[in-house]
Structures are given as structure tokens and as C-alpha cells.
Length: 408
Length: 140
Image 1: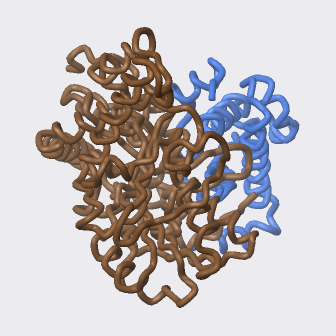
Image 2: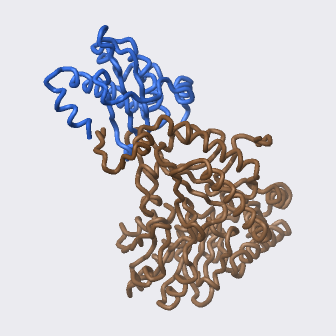
Image 3: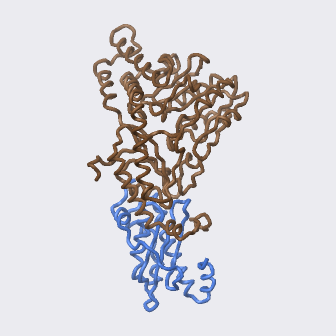
């Protein structure tokens, strides 16, 4: 019944995606034939490279509703986030030293914030609700006359929850605070429009949208207001002086092609992914009890499904679904277990966090793959529950939270 | 992480999964670990009153593959041993048999703890003086 699916099945599209062959095809000539430096102004190699870069800039801009002139190419979203947060902090430090973000941001946002705290900035980490959302009211209440930047992710990488960007953007605009969003998981998957959402800075990366690894972009608003940044690295003054370094032309071409493709396919991809995700969730919950959904039921990335399987341990679960590439909510190493901070932030208990699995469906996911994954998950959970003392106690009606464990 | 073939074998074909009646005076039960730590092992022995040998052993484990394999292996080793011999089972032997990497040594420690807890439970039930107190806690 597995319809000869290729194993292991890649269902981890929130971590990265397969580069679309159409994107690869667009890139290839820029490695071997049109290999000029986009900054070379005095020969045709340079001109055609520059032309390709400018075309890609427009393709990226098209996806998020801005001008190509407002796109700064970077090595990826980590660099984009660092540049946005540290660049704004450095440029606007005379105006204020307060930054607002959320507890469930990616490390590429949280860690630059932590570094700024060591340098004398104050950072507010807003908590999120049980579904993973921050409310615009929380943002408004946290803004002080020292606040220079609000950074809230568009959609969460683990639980897929989408934030109310437009409402947060409106508040930032009203209070004269810059608004940055890490939109790595959102662009190309859900509508993102920097004008409609009042976004001043936006980070994105190619490899989450079926483009190559090693290339990303930062949108930096040019008017209303004109956002300025202190560059992190010094050099030839590329990218309006905000990001020096020879442009990675083939990768940039790939990013552009990936953006255009994502924009074009979104209308058909969203309903297709929603239907596949429902098929997966329904197949699993039809066969298993005590399965919890982490994240928002509707305000959610179409391809993301994050489930907790009570009474089984995460690593054993991963062993049981060895033909499926997914991510789990914990990293079990020796005695120190670190449950996901995102799941902790939405109030998922440590033991459930350990048995949480993130399924990331994507452009290349098929119905046959979904059916295979559902079947293997059900088999693994049943196998593990048959040997789980916790499941046995649960079935006997014992409330596990009242048990005194002999911890070790 | 790459698991040894022995760990994989115990994971896919666990030996002696199940439960005995905890109230049975010939049964000793050990439950160690905690859900928030990622492992809970329940290990039970049933002792033949005539021979004094462990005639059967069962386990249920919530934990990673190495924890499951450690407890599955422990039940195999317990069968046929006297209680005193069972107390000699060391976690290092489990590590060796299953080729556990350093980060998984704690799984073997937990299995040794579970063996000792099960034996202690059995002994307290069968040492006369302690049996009354023991029934009071288990009855709950």
C-alpha cells in the first residue's frame, strides 16, 4: 500500500526544503557561463551579472510587496536577523535602548538580542498564549519611550503559529517604533505584504522556499520611514553600504527564481497542503487516542503539523519512525534533556514536549507519502504504548501528575 | 544516533513486556525514573518460593531505545537467578552487552536501580516485619 514511496520520506520541510529543479536550472548558467562580478562596471560579464541580480531583486520584492531597491542580499536568515537587530540597535542607540521581541523567536533573533543585553540594551521577551500567539495589546503595552525596535516572527518554525503581523505593524507605526519580522517560514507560504502589514524590516531565506542554501535577504524600508542600519561587516560598500561582500550571483538568481515560483504556486499549493495535512492528522487521530495538537488550529502554516503523543518518549518514537525524516521536540543527550523552549512557552509539559513530532509537509510531499507516514506513526506509538508503564497507569485511571516519582 | 544491533533487536522485539500483580507476595516491583526526565522503568520479578530463584521477570519502560533495551535485557538476565545473584548484575555489564555509548550509560544505571528496587520490594514483602508497612503503601 506504500505505493513504492522512496524511503526515507522527507517530511521536515520546516527545517529546509529540496531545491526545486526549476530553480537549479535557472542558476546553472551563472556558475559556468555568466560568471561575472556584479560590481564590474566596465565589461559585459559584469553587466549581465548585475542584470541578473537586479532581476532577482525584483522577484524577491514582488513576493513581499516592496521595491527591489529595498532588498539587501545576505548569506541567509541568520545574517539578515543579525543585521536587522544589531544594525538598528547600533544606528538608533541615541534614540533609545529598548527592544521588544517574543519568547518563541528563532535563536537567530534571540541570541543577537541577548548579545545586545550584554552591551547595555534592554530586551522585553513577550510571552505567548497557549496557541503560540502574541497579542497586539501585549506589544502596545510593552512599548516605552526608549523602544526602538519590535521584532516578532511571522510564523513559528516549530508549531507553525502565524502572528497578527498587520495589527502589530499598525501599533509600531502609530508609536514610531521600527518593526522587524523574521518571515523565514512565512514568505511564499502565506501572503506577506510589507505595506499592508506595516513591516519596516523583513528577513527571509531561499532554502525554506525550495531555493539554494547560503542565500537570504533583508528587506529594509526606504520611505515612510527610511530605515538606516549600521553595517556589521566593512568592505566594498555593496548593497547600499549595508552588506559588503561580492554578490553570490548564482545563489541570488536561485533566490529570485524560488521567490517567483513560490508566488506563482501559492494559490494551488496552500489548499493542496491543507488537504494533505488534514489527511495526515485524521489518519493518525483516527487510530490513536491521547494525541495533542501543538500550536494554532487555524492560524497556522499550511504545511506544519506538530503533534504530541502522550505516554511515549520522543527518541524511542523517532526510532519507531525510522523511515520518516521529521523533527522531535527534544534533544535527548545523557541525563540532560532539553525540551523545546517553544513548546515550553506554550505550556506543553516537559514529558509531552519530548514526545512531540513536527511534520513539515512541502511542495514535493505526496498523498502516498502521507499515508505511509501515518501508518508508521500509528504502528510506532502502539508498539511503544504497549510497553509504556505510563500508558498502563493512565488506562488504570491513575492521574500521572499525582504520582510521586523516584527521580534519578 | 546510531544504535547497536542489540539495542535495535530489543527495541523491535522486546523480551518479557508485561506486568504481574503488584499485590502478589511473590512479586517484587521496582519503578524508577520520572516522566519529566524522559525515562520511567517498571521492572518486576516473581520468585519461586520453593527454589528461591527468580522464575519470571517482566518490564514496561517509557524511555529511549537504550532504556527499553536495558530493561528488556535485564529481564532476560534475571530469569533463573537467585535474588542474591540478581543483586550482582551491574550496569557496566549492560553497557558492555548492548554497546551503549557514554550518553546512554544512564539507561543502564536506571536498569540496575530498577532491579535493586524490585528485589528490595520483594524482600520487604517477605521479611515478615516489614510486610505490613509495605502493604500499606502499595495498597493505595
